[in-house]
Length: 264
Image 1 (cartoon, rainbow, N blue to C red):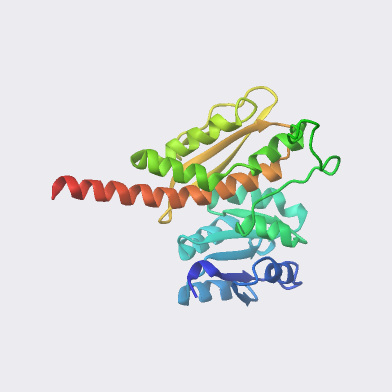
Image 2: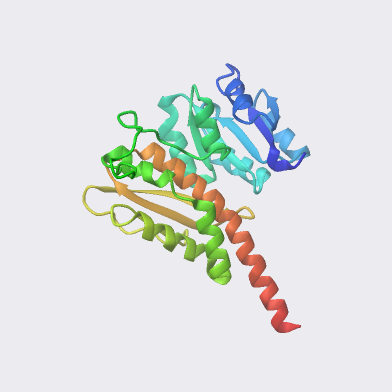
């Protein structure tokens, strides 16, 4: 079974994730180990596409633990899970190599979202119909603004950027997404050494690194209204960063082929 279809679940003693995980990804091979050291041992002998790690045991020294696992995982995804009180820690760990996080107890839908097994959807309870002219009711309000991010066809946008500008697919894709979500929200990508500009009054900026071969190549910065749903926005940003990392691999492969064609 390919590594991308193998999931390592660490330290889920109360099975807050395990049962929902098996329902969310029934075709995946799930390996459960009791603790972080067991997880490190397992990663040293086998490859996994996704590693789920409890946030609580790493609370005392979170950065070294995350960095060690990040090196072992390589191109795989590292996802934290934990009680709602640990969400600030999980959010901070996004800066050190964590791809996303779950608040437990986690539902099947939430796990599918962070694994990318299903498209993110937000259903409006107050209206499931159409307007008289047959159009879908317009999104409005704080939750709906961020929900509009979840309907973006990210794979299509990235593929189109790769086809139209293969030498600069990453920056082209980010610009295309930024054009779609503006002017209420803004998306930019900057070098890890460059701080994002201060957000305007009433806005906040969420950030997520883009990794390539264990190297932090870029950082995505999403600016949204301060009162909007930041949890949903962070999940969107994490998924985009994961896809962007794959896009960078293809972009570098194209650059390498172009260089060979010139020098040969």
